[in-house]
Length: 356
Ligand code: KG4
Ligand code: ZN
Image (cartoon, rainbow, N blue to C red):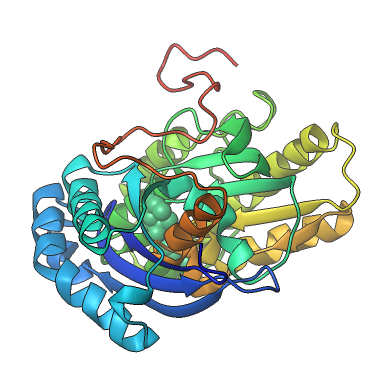
């Protein structure tokens, strides 16, 4: 086995075609030799959301080019690649299949191991691409499809402490943005929009805030936004509603994170880290507020670099590298799994029948 393995990672679970090449390093923090992310904003903009068939077609058209670009930028030749890793789930099945099939073909032609990676594990371990933190740590994963508090106990070992019972936080940002007429992609644009508004103008609900442990709920908030948009008539009021939404989210996350702190602290952990990962972790207001509560509660806040918050292949290559080190390879018949979870033992908590 190569002393400093080089992993080529591929991510195509949704609307980003991404390829990255990383190399192991004695420091424990691998070197990112290249990290190419091609977003499809322009393709989906006119539909106000991701259209799976268009996303998959675009992955097929671009994957070769992006892989070549990643190789060129890294200066690595194909014969130096130790293994090929690709996201196998969760995500859109026709999109996952593109990256997965590409990875399998490449691995078999290079005669190197193929490794399937859980996309959520990529987000969960992404801070390890630049910080040397030890397990276990508390994770708040906030992305377009997921919102969960987890104890990250080690590679492949997760305990879910709380999850959303309805919408994901990124979804709430995107839907609110759409209601306010903000251009796709909603999340990052809404944050800028909110800066011009009064965060105290509208009082919005905080669903299940005093119950359900650190489980989360955002659907009622979205309904309240929909109701309120019917009564606003000026541009300034739109800014105010965006600002009030941003403030409400910050408050919900602070209250629920403190519940998760207590839950996580039941294990006696020497130094307590709070990692916030996933696309929504790029939100500056959320970052500021969560750093503040970490300081007040003896947790060390860790946020992945902004370019590693959204979907990327460096995080997939990293999980691939960790699996490569323990020879956890996959067979070429591994199937894409659109519902792959991190904590397989956690019960399904979605829908109107949920009891908290
Ligand atoms: O992790 P990610 O890139 O893809 C998924 O795995 O889902 O997350 C994408 C989500 C989208 O909903 C996007 O609107 C949201 O992250 N997002 C943000 C910000 N940047 C991205 N939400 C709020 N504020 C931001 N600055
Ligand atoms: Zn993601």
